[in-house]
Length: 209
Image 1 (cartoon, rainbow, N blue to C red):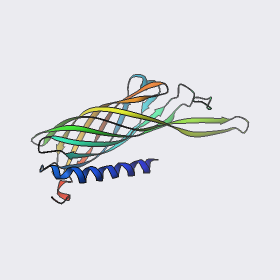
Image 2 (tube, rainbow, N blue to C red):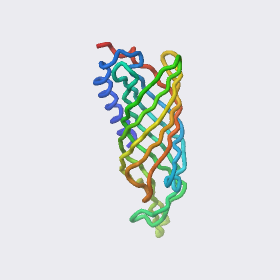
Image 3 (tube, helix red, strand yellow):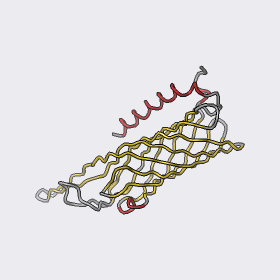
Image 4 (tube, rainbow, N blue to C red):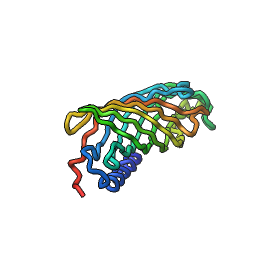
């Protein structure tokens, strides 16, 4: 699942870079983004999710000659999962499990430079899958079988961030609010990712058109 989702994301990056790069003469035409951090569940999600180490991949593609940019982002968030409601066919609730997200969001952002610093905000929508574990118990043979339930959902997301330029690469710190459009465990899914990482400037690696 993870390799397939990553492949789809990389194909989307190629599509966006080929179709959007020629629109801008900016020095920040194209950044790749790789971050680590935690996604903090909020609201009803905090009833069954707890934060674990997460990763995020993305791309910043300049639009026009102002500060606008396109921001496709792939979220590989992880949570500790304490099941509340048993799933159909699985009478036992699983505790201390691990849930994972495979969510693609495409946002529109605006970046403002102040010397070596940059500040930006963005908002967008997307969707994907949230995998939650299930425990099947065979009491006769004393066996436990773990499976994943695939929960499809749409998402909306809005966030802010800051960057510090080191020349060909920038360090960044970013946070956002992500709201699911479908429910997990019959409850609303919402989370606040906090991500730190690097954004290499790939503008010079692409041939000018």
